[in-house]
Image 1 (spheres, rainbow, N blue to C red):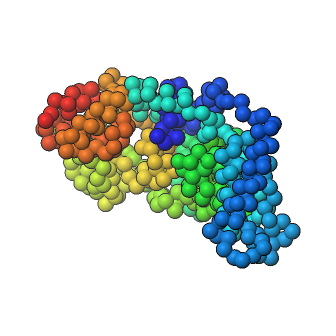
Image 2 (image 1 turned 120 degrees about the vertical axis):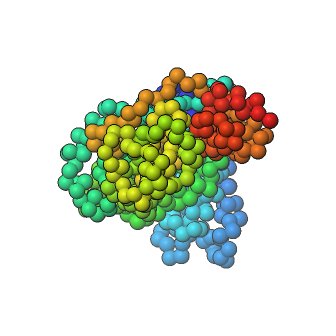
Image 3 (image 1 turned 30 degrees about the horizontal axis):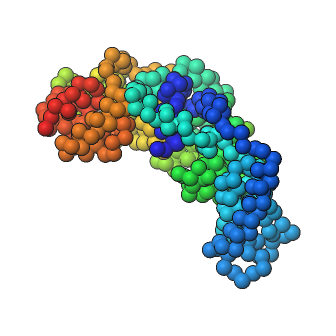
Length: 476
Ligand SMILES: [Ca+2]
């Protein structure tokens, strides 16, 4: 089970998820603190120190990168006085110490600066979030199967708030000159950048309290995303080598994303810019640097200026909702089927533009045509709910409030276990719902829609309700 799922379950259980994560993470950490073992006895730390020192020597000798018949197996050629890694003081976690000794040697062998490698990894400490005993998480997992998946209207309700829209609009006003320059340089609409800023850090007001190196090291030691975490740590070292940042600046969120627009180190290396011209890429303190960097990333992801991310639509009665199948079709095709903007007027996109019909809650509730920019938002975070919230905030800071249609909060939703039964039965009937994981993603909804279509059920909207589950279970 992925960490993100575990967190998701916890947050849902607590009912504290706000779309921005940091506040909830604090609550999570506080809860986990209660089960943390007291493990920092001094004698133990000394023992770990000895083990770590031995492991460092072993790792250097055994490292496949250190094949040169050199007396200095880990140091770069021609290095200064500090060409050999100094020993690390114990972290309080033996697995972490052993991993660090090995990884530090590999980082140096890969060409990273010895002093920066040491400074980056010197102050590691185990975090409960990643490395606490697993008893409680296991218990949460069983309990959560009986819980309801969080409906999208809850996610949107906590992410797209009046406060965020109002303050976002105010920041747009204050930063008019900056956004003029950013739009000219990158061709990304200021409202979209502001929406990302609002979603990621509440407009720069919460950038996290973790040390990026420490949280990534914890992720590496935890193991499930070790290769990813190590690669991000190497990027973190390169950021310092390039002189973009200093070691003490590297504050991050719980997963290692940094600054006002939450860049991972590898994203930072490729896309961060110094837009205020002070010689630093300071995504933490400089809104100009952070916003221009986000614009640079969105442009590289294919953002189309002056195009809508999505438009809420009206459809004629009897419309075939099975067309919400994930396929992109030309806007001219959709209009020929009778779709029109909910608020009247034009779509604001050329007839040749491609769009997907998306029903966040099936045939009842808000319905959207999604354009390319929706997918660009998803490069920040793969979740439809996230991208949808960014879109609604993009409109919201411009004074356009959606959705107009009412969410169908009266629908009977399925529990995680129900969804697993639904998936299992769809697979049994030959409609590939993918893995039986209790999460009704696009794969599950697509399979349900194909089942409904094949069974002549109307509407064939793929939305998993108790009625849909009964229909699938009754089929053979
Ligand atoms: Ca700067």
